[in-house]
Length: 271
Length: 64
Image (cartoon, rainbow over all chains, first blue to last red; front, top):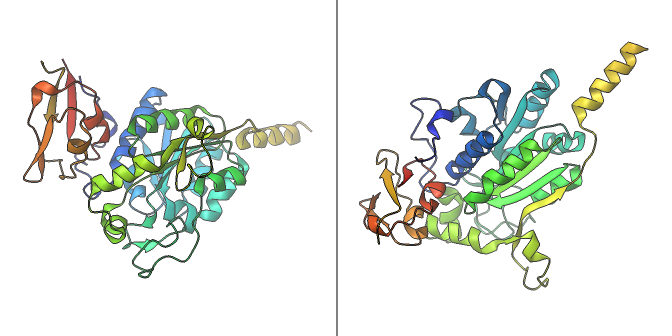
């Protein structure tokens, strides 16, 4: 039998609104497989998002879902996790929502190391609002608001998350569909803040402005730039020029926020 | 060579991105007026790559 994705999707919601070839659907499939692999129950799982194309995802998923203010997914998710620490909390959103408009919430959720999983779909652009450049649009690339090329350097979102204090940081691409569910599942099992950056394709507002003739061209680019961390260790800096590392980039153990908070409550109440 | 899987296409979901056609290692699929169709069913090796990479939930690979 083929994989049963429909059991996790709200009835009558397919086909989804994402454009032809948009990788968000591939990521949503990966997320469903990861949640199945972790044995998550619908009633004990909350999926939170902000605003944007990627943030449409909770609308399709048949779990406890919350569609919140732009960039504030991590903040609302922190509230859910603090009120119900036994719940598995998953955030999903794009680069514009998570790391630009919600950059502040994102870094502080990482710093607190609260136990949640953030699936960050990086499609290099603000897709839903018309293709404005985001904090992860590569230098020189075209967007609707940078018609002569983006002068800004872009964020390395995984490095940002590591620097901010996330204790599990991984990266993959929409092309590497097999890897998406494995990394998300590992993130869900990790006790602490897990960031899974998925490099994605936006053929409508990013691809056509940047000389990708088709969705397939964008997928081939994702295939070409991805280098597994294990392989990168044996490569020279020249060989790694223009490449992006994929796989588990960072993992450490540090006290989790809800547990630290519960300890303070117990200590003060006991005193 | 006999097919290792039966590929079901949900045409109402297919948006014609052709990712599945491009990355099928045995060229089982092809585009037909912006909707994917199974053109060479016998060559299917049940690798599941088309189902994994279909963003639109339009392909189901039933292993035989």
